[in-house]
Every structure is written in structure tokens, then in C-alpha cells.
Image 1 (spheres, helix red, strand yellow):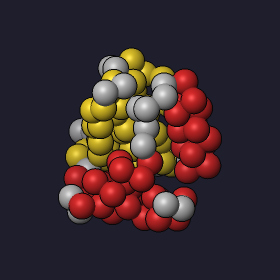
Image 2 (cartoon, rainbow, N blue to C red; image 1 turned 120 degrees about the vertical axis):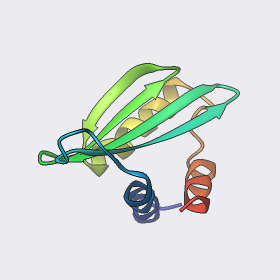
Image 3 (cartoon, rainbow, N blue to C red; image 1 turned 30 degrees about the horizontal axis):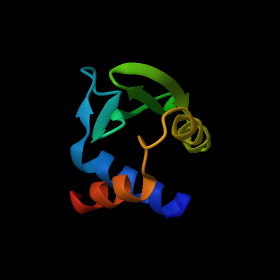
Length: 99
């Protein structure tokens, strides 16, 4: 799956499932993936400063980053640090299924 396809799927998921952070200037959508290697939580937030991703592994925040390029670089690092946790093809196929 290429980056454009992943971005399209995550953006569509965000639009369908976003919730306000309270003041209606920030909106978030969360995806939770449970695997044999642990639990991965992807939180996409859109606010006036841009698109922010918060990445949690087993309920511990591992990263908070801005923009898509940083997301892809960070997920490469997460994959290396936590083998078997992030299966990009499976995760985004499932995400696409629910939108």
C-alpha cells in the first residue's frame, strides 16, 4: 500500500469518526489495533496548527508528531522497535473496511 492510499484511507476514517476536543477548533479520531505484540493506538488530530499524530504503544505515548512525512518516518521507527505490532497493509485494509 502506498503513502497516498494510506493518507486517503486515514483521512476518510478521520472524517467519518472525528470527535471535537471541546472547543470545535480541534478534532480527533482514534484507531486502536490489538495484536499479539501489543496494542497500537493511532490518534489523528486536526487543529489550527495542522495535523498531529499521537502514537501510543501499550498505553504509553511513544510519539507526537506533525504532518504526514513525520508520521511515515515515525511508523518505520515504531515497526523497528516493536516487531509485529504495526502491519500497515492489515491495519489500513481494516480501516478502509469500516469507512
